[in-house]
Amino acid sequence: MTEHTDSDAWAKACAEDLAAEQARRRAQYGTGQGTAGEELRRLFDTVADKLTTALGGPAAKVAGAAAAGAATSAAQEMARQFLATAKAASEAVVERNPELFDHLTAARDELIAAYRAAVERDEARWTKDGPDGGPEHIDLDRDTDGNPT
Image (cartoon, rainbow, N blue to C red; front, side, top):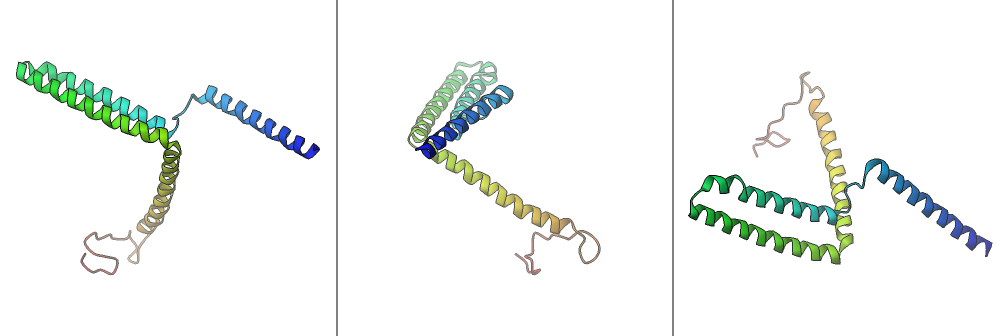
C-alpha cells in the first residue's frame, strides 16, 4: 500500500513540476506555435484574409469599369467559397483525427533529419579536395560512372 501511495505522490509531484515548467515557459516565450491542426486553421484564415485583400484592394481601385468590378466581385466570391469549403473539409479531418497531424509533424521532422544527414555527407564529399587537388567536379549530365544520363 505504501508503494502505491509513493508512486501516486511521485506522479502528482511530477505533474505539478511539469505544469509549473510549462507555465514558466509560456510566460517567458509565449504560447508558441500550437498543434499542427491549429497551424492549419491559422493558415486558412491568413490565406483567406490575404486573398480577400488582394482581390478587393488595388485590382478594384484600378478597374474602374463596372464590368471589371463585377469580374472582381465574382472572383472574390469564388475564392471565398473555395476557401470556406477547403477550411470546412480540413476542420472535419482535424476534429476527427487530431493525432494524424501530430504524426505527420513527427514524420516531417524525421524526413528533414534524414535529408540533412544525406546532404551533409555529400556536401563534405563535394567540398573536400579531389584527386587533382581541387574541389570535385559535378557533372549533372553524367552518372557517377561518367555515362550520359
